[in-house]
Image (cartoon, rainbow, N blue to C red; front, side):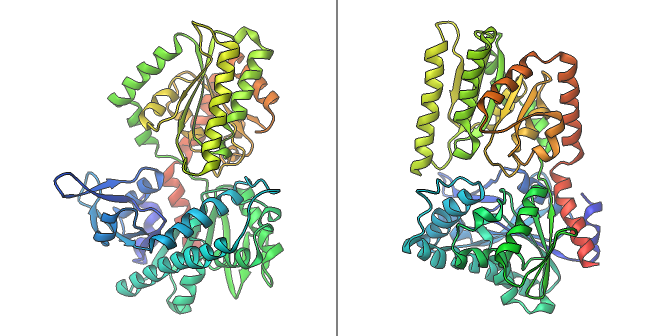
Length: 495
């Protein structure tokens, strides 16, 4: 990590990260004392590594009343004397509701995952416009003002890293607030897919154009895959008047500013994952999963319960496998660990009901007193997921759309059975892992069933070769490399 920070250290640049959720959430315990709950995920891990070397500040939206009361301060990083400064914005609850639950989710999230049922949704009503103007724009402006305020206080060059679809308007607001000569270098990384202009054309111009124009106000715009970056350039060409697009070099010039477009596939914290796999908690869960299998082979899926993950078609494909290849009956179990997600939204609750019904139908039609073909677990437990990943013969990821899908990278790292990865061509991970996986079209349940059969009957030597290839690819670029690649790209821009 130190080498990739050389340019930032030498230029004495501060680092500011802005995201909807921060690296900590603050709660008050039974004794009335404040406690810091560290966020999970690779982004937090990568930043804490960076913060050990340079001045780093994370700006986020308050999630609890204690966050609001605390406002800002310095917190220690785990295991050493280094610290990171965290600052919260405290938006009005009604504004946050519009920003998060009307515009960011579900409008933008559904758009970017190509999940709209267009004859019926979206319906962009007066309430939607109010959420856009009084929620999304308002809170994005608050983020920009908080960043500008911090820049004014530190009085030094800075690198600002904006995260994801919640903060699309911050780039434009920040450039409006700060004189050109004093502006920081700015990266915006988009963690979810970017669809083609045909889909963006469904948004009204008065939403679409500001979003695209704001993203063109940053210096470096990062996406998960080359396709996402290309789709962004095409979207600019279609909907951003007077923009100049260079596809070969990957940039957009708009309002006398050049935004460079690159792909930075996100990855995992390999060392932390391997440590988790060796933990006593994971070992206990591993024994539980082995008891469930009862010498059967394991087809595994680990997902959030949301429509883009394509869980129901995965079950239908397994049903097709049992119909077409009855030799697998009684010898294979499909185990799904499904984490609840946004179940207060009707569409998500309906989806859960449908997938439960699909699993029940398979068990009723094919199971007996000694063999239950499908087992579902609808609670969130990362140690249990890591335990199960060590045991799979087949790991199924058949998402309709996914920015990356980190399970595709976590599974091969901890798996101990030379398990085969079946991977949707619409998952971002396919750009890197496609050669070592069996790649399927997410809507083709017949081909997915045949892929399961191929994986279950694949010669051991081929399984080993595929598994080793996946591990080598994943180890080549971990979460630290993801951050370093962005810093290296920025260093080229500021020379």
